[in-house]
Length: 320
Length: 320
Image (cartoon, rainbow over all chains, first blue to last red; front, side, top):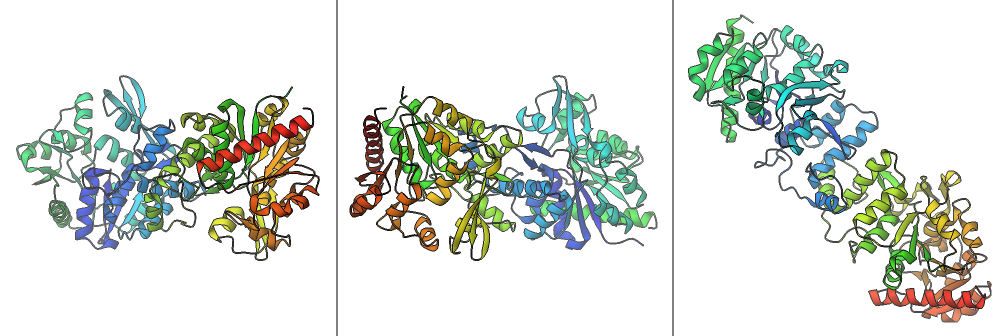
């Protein structure tokens, strides 16, 4: 029997938009968000988890709507003081945001798992849906570039994505274990697994690369639906399109279909890419065309609804 | 031959006032400040050094003139966010102040000594005088109270000094080594050693309790002069007077003389305590009477000058 729970795999800003839409449509107990932790890194001795925090801030209403990351009404006194003392200032840490990093680091150092720490923080912030990191073991995306390997945040923030990408490595992935909370949820057969419109290479692929996680998702025999992050040959945000071009792929939603072929059952592509629907379908993937640019909360909710009804159709089709 | 260097032993707010006065009178290379580190503690995984930081902020012009501790123009977004996440909020950490704690903790965890970390930070903040912690090993003042033992900051901040004090223990002191930078300065025979008007029990005594430090100061055969922190039977700031009363001592500058007898050569007492000069002298201590309440910068400078000329007199008297 299929349960009512939806499992969403999410990176940062783009993924959090769909997650927010889902949270408005689903009851809290029916939404579980699995976040990418391969962007996580240690900075100034603090454990920073950009994607997980973006989801947490988005769901708690604390996120900054302009920047997309970090907290609204943030102040930057810490950075100012750090700079005056010659500290590293390439990664911006807001004063309020620091509370999360300091508290998390303290608890991790005391031996708590990231899952437990984030669960407690989510509860304190009044977040209903379960938000779990893909795993509790540290995994670090290394971006292979023509200038040599770069830790993800060095590539993304310090170098502003300027170096030319040749590939990716998820350091530590072999020792990672799929989040047990997720594995338990899969035992209950979720109603659908949604892949948010996040960067396939550095946001979604690390999640799927956790040993056993990809096959566990597939074996749950529930529809797996992705939302394409490429719209009209461009990414709304982040380096996905630039990476695709540098890796020699066509910058197109078709490439997203190729990337997810054999794994996803359905792909939601944007209106602007309607003419590519047949090419996507050729990969054995069901296609839905929709307005996927999420500017307003209504856009987020509409896309969430569409993804859920797409999942319903696929389930009915397969008699599940 | 006597050098020109003055070594000042200091606790927090009160001590830093005299240190600031000294910094206006002496050239930077002739002032070394030794700070109490027995108030230091770990909070949220961060190493906090209240007395050292107060001296650093005071000398860099960053200190808040009203509060005495912390930074001027401070903001409190971190505390607000911490509270919202159910974090411990009994110890106030300002947003700018956090930069110092985070940077220090990161460097200490990387294996640097507190001395090296603070030297670098002082240099980055443009501080001329050398500021050294009494030792690089962790020492923790435990306040013995009728309610049981309390870590110093728990007594001082969390419990607002309410519990009745029965004694003190400096945990870790047996393994502490006098700061080597201080020991080297003592080899050069300083012109004077000044004990700032800090709490004798919890600010100065921990410094003198570092094994070998007290005797090294004494053996430098240079005048040791203290400024009484008790004025007219009261402490300007902090729990010194309350502690004295609870320990069964008379709350008087005479008690300060008793406390430092056999160690200091001279004691500076306030005008209001002029009638106690003979009682102080009876401990074999030279006395000077002065205006010791430091409200303005001019007050700080005047007291610094007086302490220095007092030292000159004692040196000349002893033919040093």
